[in-house]
Image (cartoon, rainbow, N blue to C red; front, side, top):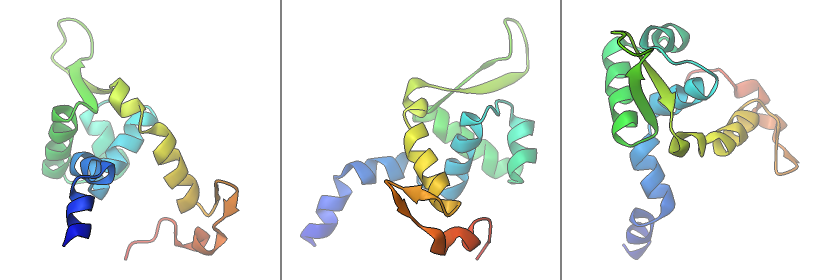
Length: 120
């Protein structure tokens, strides 16, 4: 029981509560790669529109993304990374490298290279 309490008060707990589902992580990764508009996220990720809308709203609420007009007076909106969101880049680059069978801190993880992109 004490172990669960320690996890609940950890940095990992805080991070998971903010970006803990796979769609949110993929949205953040896509935004870090330059995706800014709803339709582009939807087509790039293949996520249902209602799920995308929900996850984008949560990421904005958490301060990871900011939602703003494409230009002054425009009705079209875009999503941009905040400094808080940009701070996720190094961690997500490590996860991407690991998922691609690359190395993390000099340790190769080739056993996982064939698993990247598979759905289970």
